[in-house]
Image (cartoon, rainbow, N blue to C red; front, side, top):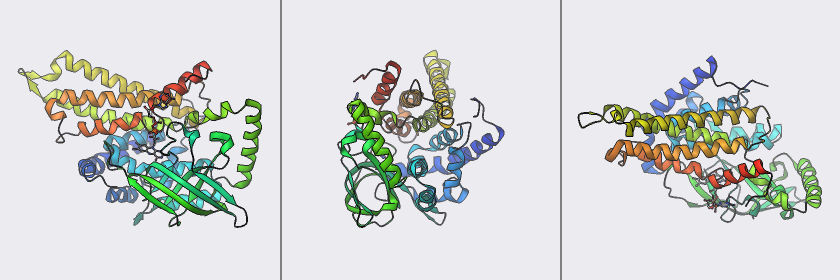
Length: 409
Ligand SMILES: Cc1cc2nc3c(=O)[nH]c(=O)nc-3n(C[C@H](O)[C@H](O)[C@H](O)COP(=O)(O)OP(=O)(O)OC[C@H]3O[C@@H](n4cnc5c(N)ncnc54)[C@H](O)[C@@H]3O)c2cc1C
């Protein structure tokens, strides 16, 4: 187990500087254009693939970094460049993690390369869990997967929504109900391979922020996938369901219904790190502006009203990063989240990004309110962090339940 450290080692610093260079030279200059176009920035993803930032190897290296700092460092730098483009780059990684965490070695080897494609023909992947009636309440999921034993195939029916890269992905990872009696414990994840009949894109959403990232409904109409597409395999699923049925009998079902809220504890710090990247970007623009913009014959930072805001912004950003790094280290080193530290990090960092980007607009005055400067885009982008991967209210619920041991509603 690695000791918790607040300092990047030399190798990590090198990677961070390399990522920062890409974010500054390639992502940031393209940000405004792709925000306006509201389209997936394929040329930027391809550029990232060419230099090695868009690849399984790179993310696996960061994901398994024992210090836990690899993923937060990566997210912070890329999202510092631009949140919409960065999500287009790392969105595939979110689906790949689903396969890495639950798949067999064979599934990992077969599907993850197809999620990324190669530098001449880049592909993306999608992770589809949310549904129109199952957002925060994951246990209400309706998409159903039924096993056809005669053909050794799973038949999937349902509608997914809010899927990042949904419909344009080469590989979709779809969460579906296999045993409706077990709430979220009766869910399983499936690979839907490229070109599978029955999977189609529904509505593409026009969004407030992260507009370079494609978000859409995914319709599954009698989608048939081979038995080998069940992540983890049938034997493991049957064992897991048997254990869950046993527990449900003992606990009367109530506890299992709510279990899903805590399942993302380990992945939440990564979203916190994205928020830190956006907040830091807006803070830096505001600091530069406050030092150079003059009113009443002196730079506006000469006023405590402005300088103190910047002091608060930076303090919050550093505090958010520390929470993110701690939770990420805990996740990698298998430390139990006894105080829901993963949720804490995501809650604080996402609220920080919203607040800091709003303050940045205020510090830039009229310019902050225009698209000539990037802080209004950063503020629109920041709003997503308090919504996806569990809203702020759900983070508070998880933290409060974990601390109290009470079924707080
Ligand atoms: C841009 C974008 C990208 C996304 N990408 C993906 C993706 O790739 N894959 C995927 O599966 N999903 C994705 N999502 C879905 C996202 O995770 C959900 O939007 C989120 O979980 C919230 O669900 P909901 O939108 O249905 O809101 P709801 O659950 O309907 O919540 C509405 C409001 O009610 C509050 N609320 C709900 N229940 C409680 C409660 N018990 N206590 C207090 N307050 C409560 C919420 O906090 C929120 O403020 C994405 C969403 C967006 C907007």
